[in-house]
Structures are given as C-alpha cells and as structure tokens.
Image (cartoon, rainbow, N blue to C red; front, side):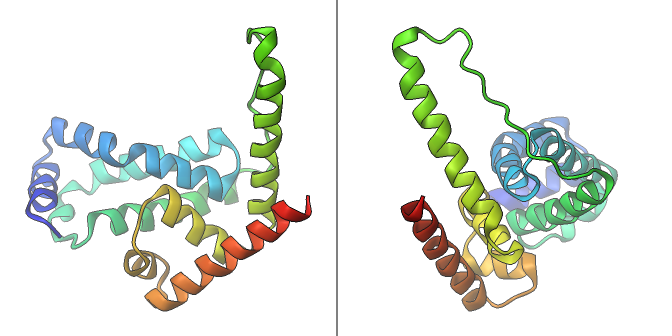
Length: 176
C-alpha cells in the first residue's frame, strides 16, 4: 500500500472528518456500482454502502491495521450486501424514466435503456461467484490479487472467473 493510502488510514483512525469525506469521494461511486451489481436494487445497494461507511466510523481505531484499503472496503461491502440481501426480498426494479426528454432523444434513450436492461439481465444470469468478480473488477477497479483477497480465492481463480463471465456475457448478448 502506498504512502498516500497509509496516511489516509492514519487520518481515518484519528477520526478526521475530512478523511472520511476523501475516502467516500475516492471509493463511494465504485462501492455503489459494485453493490448495484450484487443486489440489483438501488435502495439495497445504497443501504449496503451506507453500512460499510457507518462500520468504518464505528471501528475507525482498527483501520490503522488495514494493509489494503480497497480490498478491505470491498470485503466489507460483500458482507454488508449479504446482510442487506437477507433482510430484503430481491425484486427487479426499473429506475429509468424518459419523462421530460426531448422527443428526438426518446428513441435513442429507449434503445440505450433496452441495451442496459439486456446487459443487466445477462449479468443476473451469471453464477454468483462470477457476478461478484465482475462487480469487483469493473466497479471496484480491483486487481485480481485484491479480488482474490476479498473472496478468499487465488488471483488465478479470480481471473478465470472473470474470463468465463465475460465470455458468457458476450454470448448472451450476441444471442439476444
């Protein structure tokens, strides 16, 4: 871990409010995107990310012991997403509206929404272990080594799951 990340962890452990804001700015969007892939519902994803940050505040003194901040955050997210999924029934939710779009953009918007939905349907059909790797790699921007630490698997296994998932997604999108 770099000196910048170590300094941030030290500031977090000291309870510096600006450090938590910096941490959120740096990782919040990636955590939310990964949680969306894991949970499918925006509200559930937001709850999971909020749980991660609330837990960080509560256990801030132990953060100085963290060796890989990104991996730590995504391990925490994975656990949090599991708790959220247990608490709430999983339901597909479409959170897209075209209201207010200029008429000329409606068709392209509808096509973009359809492509987005096709991709999400294909992702939801992936086995859970491949879906997790996709989320951690694309949304979390983690390396295969970090993904391995998060999931408790080897980096080679993480890379293989990623390759298999990408191949399945390509095939599914081509078939649709």
